[in-house]
Image (cartoon, rainbow, N blue to C red; front, side, top):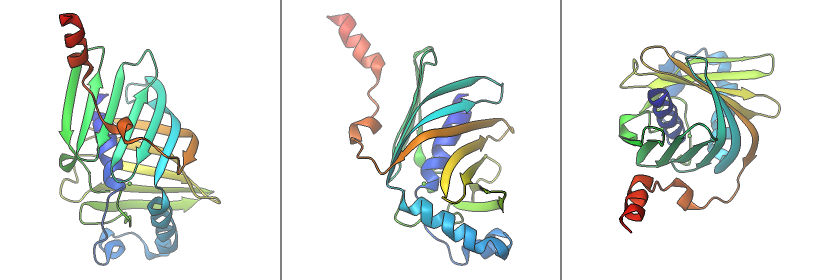
Length: 215
């Protein structure tokens, strides 16, 4: 699950940071008939300053978990898993940190090594210098958009699914380079809350435990 969740975090941070590229939608090859809906999605994502939501997750092996999701633009995220899952994933906008308390293991991934240009600047474009929109659909009250890294197209994708009227993000689906899929559904989402920056700072508990043991 670690790789898929790092991909998920990186893609979402990227999705919140993208800059527009010239003729972005034409470059992506998406049918121009979706241009109005694409513009609505981009405007909606650009308007989100922060999010707090419960989430439920289904991994490629069929396992399920849940927890709390926090996001603050630009680039800050926290996936706080509920017990018994020992996982915490934090992005401070520069580094994505994955902590597995069960294994007592920390993994650091630079945001630049993920799809980390896309859900954190003032204006979001699904196709940008760092991302490419590969698939878009709008039907039966559901809008779906899939993006990949422009320079690393084989390293995974992120699909964002929205309910329509009103437009609201509901599901995020990350697919890694081997085709493994992680699906996260957001529930009870609150948009625009004031979030303390401390939520997005990872303090290595292994160091804390070590100091305690030394006393």
